[in-house]
Length: 400
Image 1 (tube, one colour):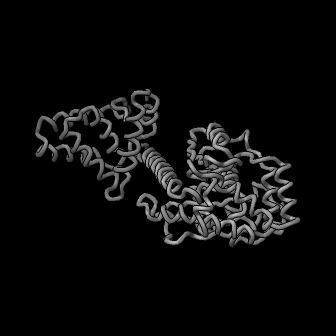
Image 2 (cartoon, one colour; image 1 turned 180 degrees about the horizontal axis):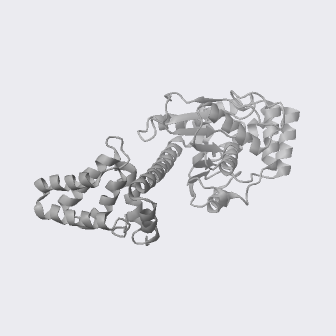
Image 3 (tube, helix red, strand yellow; image 1 turned 135 degrees about the vertical axis):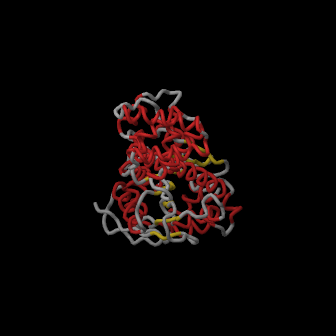
């Protein structure tokens, strides 16, 4: 067994940079052209037009060289990851069809930190039977992939699709099947025959979308619903009028689902980054003891506010580079005094000391504020300041 060498290419319109990356994997017997219709629509959707889209071919399919040795699903997942790393690495969104979907499940289980979101179409944690795949592999080794065209036309597409498609992407997909390396195809069937992750799906942490085709007799809508049920938080959508290659038959519907799914995952990821950054700034400014007390006192009713304050106040505003923490303390003390928010002034007097202001400078800020906030407001703030200076160890004045 060995990790095969795969090749991928960025879809047309992809510009270099740090934009989110979407990796697309095709099904057994097809190439990355399977995704053409979906990619075109994603490129014209303002929600996804700036995505970096990387498509990767399977062993002996399309641009990927023939596999000189056998491989299993884990090695296919590592091969995909190697291409992603060559393209810049990092976390990415992942979508795959059939065998590409199985590889995606394996990758999400083996490297959860790399998969930002997961979309799998017409696939499974176990597809078919070992005997069935052994028979398919033996047939290809004996007669070549050309012998599969008639059967694939029936399995891949909904009734009537090829008649309507005449000379279109469906016919071209069947044409590329003939060009797939026979032994590489057979080795893919060997990997599928040995693949079984049915008991591991509850370990997938990536937001997951499962897409099925109404007429798919290989990975039926019922089996895809079962798959989604076994993955925490996963959602299943069945596409009417499609079969096993739903992404080719219904590219507009699939593109819409992917745009929504990837967008939602990006928003969650951005919130997570802001939350982590906010917690670091919050602890720097207020101190671990204060923050630990605030977290410990959180209730179900105040949890959303705690999260909002951490992400927005501390992660977005206090973390901005335009002002240093010292300057932000000055602005905060003036604002709290002006607004008459005495309950938080003590907390931010202590924060100002942590951020490098001296006692004299804090007093000067409050004196200056009196010109604009009024004498009573500053007088109250100065009284709170004196109390903080007299009792520097006390820090029970606020919960943020």
